[in-house]
Length: 196
Image (cartoon, rainbow, N blue to C red; front, side):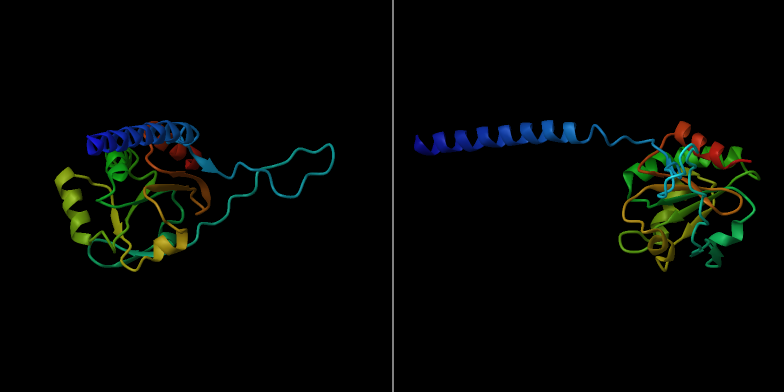
């Protein structure tokens, strides 16, 4: 009888603990919204003289990196200067990445010639080039895929979570970024920010 009572108390404590964790998660995640674009929207650190407005900081050139195309040829981010660029970091094992890939594929087809899409696969560790290629074939995606075999792009941009999307203007300057899954509307807002 004593064992049943102890088991019942442990089960009740576990239920209460799980319920509390659920409520706490809901409260803490309210401020963490997906589909948010961040960019150079903050005023410069030095205050403007009295009577003058503050201006957003000038967009900075995006750091260059080297990745590889499907044939193994090196490709640099700087090779695309002169065209607006949507730069997306993804992996085939990443559920949130897979959720947004159809929107990226549709946009890359619609904007071919106007905007360059660089879909950089985080190859290495959990991801292999073969896994990424299999997903692309299976889903019939036509956007250009580049492989970060040396982790140069990941290190250069400090990629520690996926997906991440950056929007670069034709001069190669970082205009906006999104961390986490974005929908087609948010993708379009980012694209509108980098089109002339």
